[in-house]
Structures are given as C-alpha cells and as structure tokens.
Length: 269
Ligand code: SF4
Ligand code: SF4
Picture (cartoon, rainbow, N blue to C red):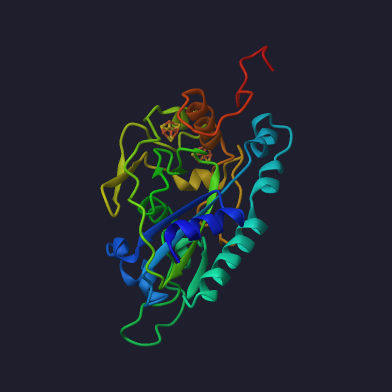
C-alpha cells in the first residue's frame, strides 16, 4: 500500500483530507497521549478530514435555527469511511486501529494494568496529529484551520503498522492573527493581547488564551462533537468560529470558493 494509493481509496470513500505522519513525530508526548501506548507496532498515523458544510452554519449565523450545525456534522460518513479504510488496510495484512476524537479529561480514568503501561484512557491529540500530517495549523482561536475549509472540518485517525510515506508537517499559514475571533466573542473569552504557545513536532502552535468556562455556557452556537464527552465544546458554530469563517473567506485565503459570501454586506442578501 502506497500513500498515494491509500489517499485515493480514502477520498473515494468520502474523506476530503488525508494526511500521514510517522509515529516518531509524537515522541513529545507521554504515554498517556502517545499512539504507541495504544498500538505498539504503529508506524504511521493517518489523519482523515471531513468537511462540515458552510450552509450548516447559516441557522446560527441568522439566529433562526440553532440545530443546523448538528445536521451538518458528518458523524455517519466519518465513521463509515474510517471503518472501510481500516478494512482496506487489513485486507493487505496491515493492522489498522480507528480512533475518534475523545476529550482529554477521559485520561487516567482507569486502573494501570502493569507498571510499564499508562493508566487508561490514552487519548491522542487530534489537532497535533493533523498538523504533523500536513493538513493545517491551529489558529489563534484554538480551532484547527486548513487551507481548503478553514475551521470547517472534523478529523478521525487510523494507527497502522503500514510504513506509509509521510507527508511533511504543515509549514504554511492560514491564521493571519486578525483578531476577528476575539472581537466577535461577547464574553471576551479569547484574550488577543497575548499568546499561549504549545510545542508541535515542528515549531509551535500559538493561540489566544481561552477562558473555556465561558465557552461552556456560551449561547452563540457551541455544540458537542460526536463521540466526545465534550470537556471543551465544539466552537465552530459559535461567534468565534463563524467570525473566522467569514474572515478567511473574505480574505481569499481558502481554496474552497462559494458563489455567495458567507456574510453578505447589509442590503446585499
Ligand atoms: S465559544 Fe463563545 S464564549 Fe467561547 S470563545 Fe467562542 S464566542 Fe467566546
Ligand atoms: S479569526 Fe483571524 S485571528 Fe482568529 S483564528 Fe481566524 S484568522 Fe486567526
């Protein structure tokens, strides 16, 4: 199985984005967050991305239907595609472990079975993986941004012993530090006066410090991600996420184009 062949299969099955990172790029993580603690023979971490339709944000954007985003989150497709990709890898004799995003607060909720193993659950950092697999970067609003969809996607992972040729870690720029996400937040939960920095496999992520307790009670459009206990609400539909969609599209920074702007000028709609 080559990376290009796998990419073709995954796209045919419904993935919009496909990236591969060698497991060595996760060496910065303790066993509690390291893929090798789940599947010790892992060579490659595959990241699959599934776009969330822009139109799914419109009910929130116009404050007329707060359920539209939930309708647009590709839960069924992402599960089915990830499962079928695992089957295709295992058809060729490679083991494939599917992972769906889980909340970090599920770590250390079980009993260590031996001194050399971490306490369950081991939770892999998806945004780190997506950067390591070349798919994009974490923006100042702490949402993952890709050059095609901005913040409008969700990810699944596959751990496999297949030695797939890796993609380079992302080295471009999507976020331009415009501050629109922070300005849009009615609670002032993003502090644009400073940056919180976190090491990546190459370089650092930097985002505005986020007061997550405000997000937990935010009424502008937070939602739950599927198969997560929701320690951090999913903020794409909230004011901070939608402001980012509007800014990145208006700035021409995304490769995915639409016939109409996300936010028409007043009188244009
Ligand atoms: S989710 Fe709500 S409170 Fe949190 S940063 Fe976004 S707009 Fe602000
Ligand atoms: S709104 Fe601007 S500063 Fe905030 S994440 Fe998007 S591009 Fe970056």
